[in-house]
Image (cartoon, rainbow, N blue to C red; front, side, top):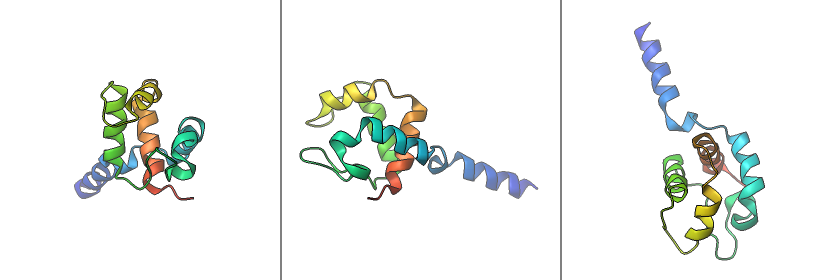
Length: 101
């Protein structure tokens, strides 16, 4: 019984299970697709954001939300990330991890 409880704790505490990819896709299509392109593949001066580890995407979005300047498009990213909740960020990260055209 203890093994089952420990297994469930490991599964549900893993960040890859934290976000809802479907909700992340909806949020991405509303807010991010115009710059980052379909499925986050990148467009013009906006980088590819799909395929990164979930933890990386969560960290980046939280840093932007906090107002940290990271790269050349920081001003726009800070503005776009400010209204995101932790759950929005988790959902976006879950979607972008596996996003494909």
